[in-house]
Length: 176
Image (cartoon, rainbow, N blue to C red; front, side, top):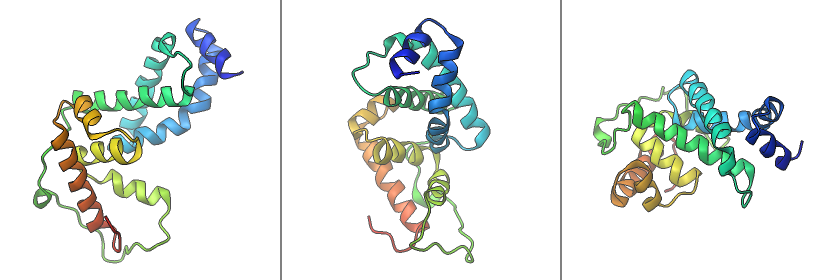
């Protein structure tokens, strides 16, 4: 099925088209969910809720960008809604109040794999992780992040800076 056929089928509530869409993007979108969630079960819930929203709102996809990009945006927004709903977005966390101990035997080197870096990013406090993902990975501006999260642009910048500092402490030999 082409993307156009999938979109039209989803608009018509065609189960086969919905399955094609899910099969095509669920793996990548699970990776997106894992960046915003604390564990696999929470990420699976966000993924499920996100695809429900995708199916319900498919008529809003205008085809001006990629279907994958639109699905990703819906999934990110679902993850942000989950964070707000669970009141886990603790912005303005001071670095001194964050405790993280990396075992001495677990030295990281230049051969990081993406999965290792994602595990490290996942250890960030929720506020740091959310802003870091939105800015560094999703490419949103601090103004957009502020609008999405109901915080000021300055708070977004501060949280991003603190997240980078936090990550630099966890990953030896990194440059900001």
